[in-house]
Picture 1 (cartoon, rainbow, N blue to C red):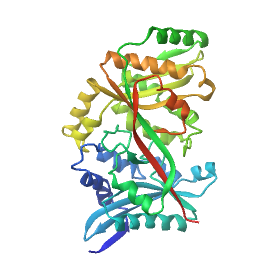
Picture 2: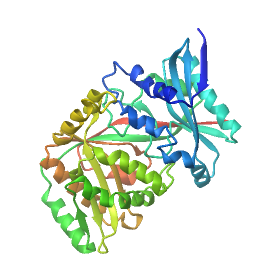
Picture 3: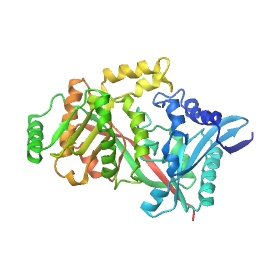
Picture 4: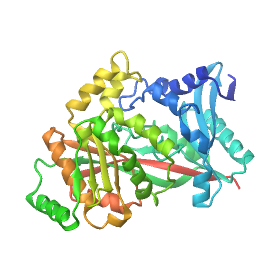
Length: 374
C-alpha cells in the first residue's frame, strides 16, 4: 500500500485536515470535538492574524487515497528571538497507529525546519499559547475541557520512539467546590479589598464583558510574560481570541479586580463545562449544536477554569485568593460541584499552590516534546 504526503492549500484539503480527528476518535468516549468552522478559521490566513507573524505549512498523509495522518509546521520569529533559539513548532499532529505514518509526518516537519534555517523542532505547539498545544501522556480516561487536548495512548509512544524527548509538562487538576465559603476567607477578602482599595467587578451580560475584554487580554500579555513559549500578542490577534471565546462564556463566571485608579490588575475566566455539550454537537453549531451548548451554560455541575492572570506587581498581595473566593461563590450559587483546571506548567508553582488547600487530584498531564536537528 502506497503512503504519500502532500502540502495542502485548498479549502477542500483543509476540510479533510479538520475531519481527520473526527474519524480517529469517533468511538472514543473522552475526545471533545471542536467546532469545525472555528478550526477552519484558525487555519486560514484570511481570518487568523497569527499568519502575519509566523511562517506555517500543513500536510496530509494518505495511503491509497485515504487520509491517515496530518501535521503542521509553524515558525514563530518572535518566540525564537525572545528565547534565543531557532525552533520550528510541530502543530496539530494526528495519525493512525502506524509508525511509518508518524515517521513520515515528523520527517516532513523536520525537513521544513532545516530548509528554513531552524536547528530543532518541538511541540505539539500552536501559533500562540491560546492555540492547540501539548500532547496528552496521562489521563486517557478523563474528559478534557474545551480548552485542553486529548490524544490516544499510542501517540506519545511513537514520538518517543522516534527520538523526541520531554521539554516540559503541563498538569491539570480536578477540584472539589466547597459547599460554603469559610468565614475566614470572607474576612480575608474584605481585608485585602480595604487595604489596597481594590474593587471586584462582576458581569451580568456579554456586552459588559466586551467592554473590558481587551484590557483583560492586555493584562494576560503582561501576566504570562515569563511562562514557557509565551510571546505577547498584538491587538489584532488578541481580538481574534476575544471574538472566538466571548460568545461561549457565561459572564457571571468571569471576575476581574481593579485598583483604586480602576485599572485591571487581575482576572479569572471560567465557564460551565461544555465538554459533553460539544460531544453532542459533534463539530457543528447548527442545527442543534447551539442548543446543547446553551443548556450546558445554564445548568452546570462542572466548571472549567480557563485563565487566571495577576499583574506581576500584585502577585504577592492576595489578589489571586480574592478572585478564587469571588468565583467560588458564583459556583456555589449555580450548583457547581467540581472544577477542572486547564494545563498549568509543572514549574509554575505559584499557580499550582493556589489549589493546595482544596480537595483535589492531579489527573491529567500533557507534554511538549523536543528534538534537535543540528
